[in-house]
View (cartoon, rainbow over the protein chains, first blue to last red):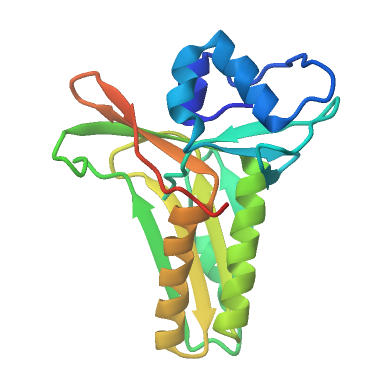
Length: 76
Length: 141
C-alpha cells in the first residue's frame, strides 16, 4: 500500500507484488524503483511498515504480508 | 476514544466522552482548514488521507501517554479524511481533567504528537488549480 506522495509517484494505492525467493524490505524497494525510477528520491524519507509495524530495510517479507510505504506524516 | 472518520466532525460527543464527575476543566482543540498556505497561497481545500490501522494505534499510544503523564484525565481524538473545504474541521481533541492547567497541557501534547506521529497526510489544493502534498514530519523510526 502506498500513501500520499509515494502513491502519486507510483500511480497506485494498493497492489499485489510478486517477489523473488527470500524477499526483504530493501528488495521490495529495489523492485519498485526499477519500475518507477522517480521513487528513488523518496526512499530515504519513507518508512516501511509490515502488517502495521514499522520495520527496517533488512526485514524479511513473506507471502500475504501487507506492506505500507509511509512518507513523512502531515496530519492535523 | 480515538477515530478516523469521513463525515464532518461534531465536537459535542467528544466533550461528553471526557466529561466526568472528577473534571473541573474540559479543553477542546479543533484543527480547521485555513484559506492561506504557510507560503501565502490561496487555498481552496485540503485532502487528508490516513492509514487507519496504524493511525488509530498511534492515536491510542498518545492517549495512553497522556493518561500516564497527566493522570487523572480523559482524552478523545478524531481525525477526518477526504477532501475538506476551507473552514471545515480536520481534527478534534477533547481532554477532561480536574484542573485547567493540566487539561490545556494535555491537549497541547495531544495535537503536537498527533501532527508528528500519526499516519495521516494532507495535500493543499490551491485556487489556481495547482495542488501539493505538504512536507511532513519524519516520524519516529
